Length: 457
Ligand SMILES: Cc1cc2nc3c(=O)[nH]c(=O)nc-3n(C[C@H](O)[C@H](O)[C@H](O)COP(=O)(O)OP(=O)(O)OC[C@H]3O[C@@H](n4cnc5c(N)ncnc54)[C@H](O)[C@@H]3O)c2cc1C
Image 1 (tube, rainbow, N blue to C red):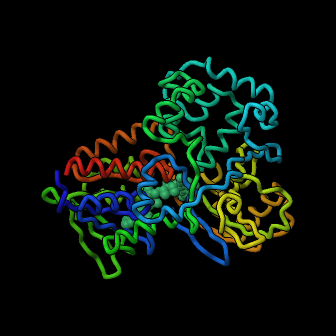
Image 2 (image 1 turned 90 degrees about the horizontal axis):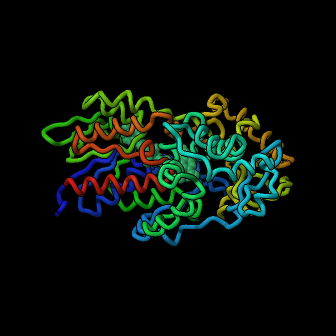
Image 3 (image 1 turned 135 degrees about the horizontal axis):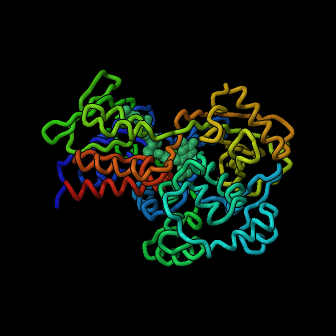
């Protein structure tokens, strides 16, 4: 089947929209990407300042799909990719004010003071716990299978680190489908992890636990920038789509550009914008989906990047960084030791820290002004790491609506999105509120959307 002369407008030049556009371009589609900002990448942007490299959104990605290699090779950026320093396998969790390394072997599991003996014995019961009766939050699922202590001192900080979310609110089936599947298919997490390894090998996929972590010498922004360059003038920046209409089997997208309002028409439209923007754009086609998309919660997150002279840090920075359980009652979610993980993140003799604040746990903290945020993050870091002086460098990025929360009942949201797409052939919703929030999930979702378009073209 030939797909020549078919056309597609992609609204939103974040990594989801860019990957979809790139693949469709290679299938000879006439592709146009409309992006509101003056650079491509959406959440995935890198800033260089005073010798520091700052990733304001994702700091790294896990190599969970072979699509990455394929894309990086064809974009000519495979040599710019860097894998995380092995030290970064070590991750810390704060408990009672002290950092504890997450155990990586049976020996260190037995020795760790991160969990009490009772908590460890409770984990050993996991293979004997039955299946759930109905939909559960992550907190309910983990407490039932692994006990309260593991929820508080492993999963709670992990969920804050991945979703900036709250395990009590998120649906285990929607937010961690692979974890949920271990129980559903294999009857338990430990049993499932052993059997699931074989299945993944067959699909050439990596589990998130074993996938390698990567970025680029010049930061994560390298990836969207390379796609932007490959798209050339198919990518139109500083252009905000304002409405979409359906006309005789074609779609018309109206957008505000540098040169006034413009109209674009195509057979297909991929909406790769956050759900709340998609809701507004779809208003003139079908309002039934508006509430569903508007109701997806994106809590605010602020990224506070600090550069310290290494002399003022007493703690060895021998890991990825640390996450903080809600029970510790701190004002930050966790800190990535960016200059330990990848090269070029800080000038010689300095260390770079990326700290996240807010999320569903403490959205109000993000409302503080920059001076207050700087003070409170420094105070937390000083008390946790024994840093004796203030940072020499800082950079703050506020994400007012950062990461979509796959809350309880999210399965219904996804069903409604699917029904909407069936009713409106040629219209596709592809962004991180569907199919996973990680960079790897966005890339895999974009591929699925492109495959659907090619099949129906
Ligand atoms: C602070 C932060 C840290 C993260 N850390 C990690 C991490 O370490 N690892 C990981 O795997 N994932 C991480 N993620 C998640 C991951 O980065 C995102 O899920 C992913 O980048 C989202 O890509 P997207 O293309 O779906 O959406 P976005 O990146 O949000 O892109 C949407 C694009 O649409 C554009 N747009 C919006 N409205 C319009 C309009 N009307 N017209 C035209 N354009 C419009 C926006 O400008 C934007 O460029 C992080 C996310 C955040 C916010």
